[in-house]
Image 1 (cartoon, rainbow, N blue to C red):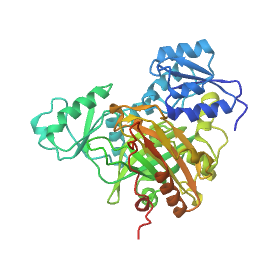
Image 2 (image 1 turned 45 degrees about the horizontal axis):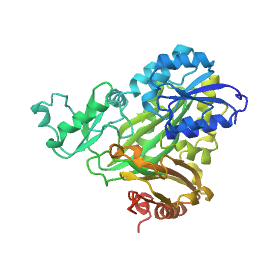
Image 3 (image 1 turned 180 degrees about the horizontal axis):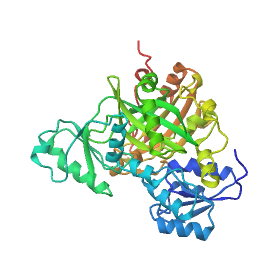
Image 4 (image 1 turned 120 degrees about the vertical axis):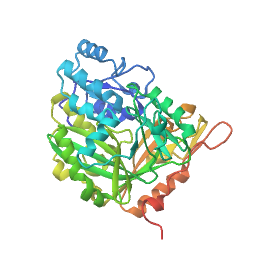
Length: 431
């Protein structure tokens, strides 16, 4: 850990629960953390050296704050929507920024990103043309089910699965309401395997840090399928390297990415990958926590170093990074909740003493309420457990153990937790 930054002032944009580990690490490095958002009760603010009531989208307000507080560097937290503002704030202040406006323009809108990918032989989800006028000739070409979503949202916000034309008008209104630029897309609803590919960049070197399989819930009909967890490395990692990795690296290079971290999300079906999302920042599902435990380097520390010095440090990705996880097996386990108020949580305290659990990132606690509008988004996630094991069999047993142990109840004794994923199927252990 770089302790030479002790006493430096770092402004972190955004304060959601997923940003808490970033703030905590900066604090341990002796850095004075200023965390900005427009909600006084946001989770990451509780850990900040100074909590700042400035919206993460308010570029003039953030620039003024940075000058007033004599801030030394700026870093975006775990929020896609704040990356464009992060770029503008850094530019106005002359600070180090791993993004550029050209890169932001590609990654901020799903339709632009999709078109860029196609130029490099990276396929997106098959799409149907439709605009807000919903013309009959366009409607007649749509084959259901489809996913309607804003071009500029994340975490499931504004997304709806439609199984018939009758559901389409409401889904379009929902997507437009959630879109700042008032654009939406209509795609084939993919019912196949889901994957994540997480890249680390350092001085122009592009490294695939982890490639993993994701599992989503199908209990919430008509809504975006929220993640239940993931297993590392992916069963399709070999195919990915043959079919898509080189194209992705070429695209990243041509776009101009030299530093930072980036996620690609893709569906896998019949030997083909269909990319559906990206994020040029630390991810909410936080693969970097598993990478820290297995690879021994921390993407958070790299980004903090870059924000304050312009260098990500002396990490040699060519020797330290390994998407095959050095023979180990890892997973994330997400506990999703139904609507209601949490009265009791059982089984989670044991995770704190378990050496196989390298992190537990909590969002919700006893007394918190899961609101109706949260269902179908990552806001219904109570916690994420991060597991690292020596073998596939040990990982399977650990996942099943915590799926069985963790129970969440409302005041009437009703279970609030959704079902987990099929561990044996995920890890190909079925006879």
